[in-house]
Image (cartoon, rainbow, N blue to C red; front, side, top):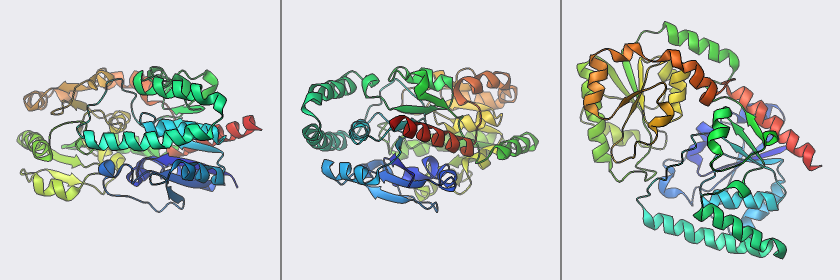
Length: 398
């Protein structure tokens, strides 16, 4: 049985991370199993989500180290695919994969940002540290004694030096050469370890052409705000009431400039909370339409540092990167070549009022796409690249 294991922090990540590529892998003869740590990340998980793609999900966040090792040894995967690497649990899982002779593959899903986020919930962080220490102590018991000093050195460098060079994955799949370059602050992949498949805009290559044609033909007065769960993830100290006021102000400006304002709520957030919390009833809360479809049919995209902005750029939409209250504005630098920067609601009103948004920087998009978004922007190509990495890893291990 050819088996590929994916790991996600919680089930809410499945629709965006696993479901788009899993059907292609299953059709190619792979058995897909998803490991998740939902119980460990319950405070940031939001509503658990499970699509219709036929794969098995196994909770490992509530297991001890012997249980986690036992699951991986029983599955005997050709590879373990991971989308994250910063948490201590991510680090530990990479080491366990190495111990179980399962090649680990990092698949880029977001940005490689050097700035540290300030976590607001210290208690939750301490609980995670405590659990990690328990797991890691057991892990040190089951490895070879000759590897003990080496493992302690690796964890020290990762935890206190933010240096993952020696704990890197066996292989990595990036959107573009720019993604590999940005990741160099953490890893030092050899050329033979790095692969590329662009940020996915659609399921298949033909869909990309169709979407681009539809986007160019569509005339709209709709502005879409790409919501991110900064409060759930504790990246900011503000609460939902303050965020509602922020969004209400944007909605008012859009209304005055005769734009429809649509908020594409993040899937981990509660749509009902925003429907009841927003005072400006002109704002539309959108949950059912896919990100690609809603941005295809809009006029302008407002966001912060979501990869959904890549979708807007691929579709040729004007991009506004706006400061979020209580959050450092470090993320603008990535989008500086192609986006309008607005610090506050007053700046936003000026951009919309003066018609600056009609003179957006689409001429710079081609270079940005090559550098950061990559080519072959469909899930089918992404899945086939993952399969090629896995098969190559299997051959090398023989």
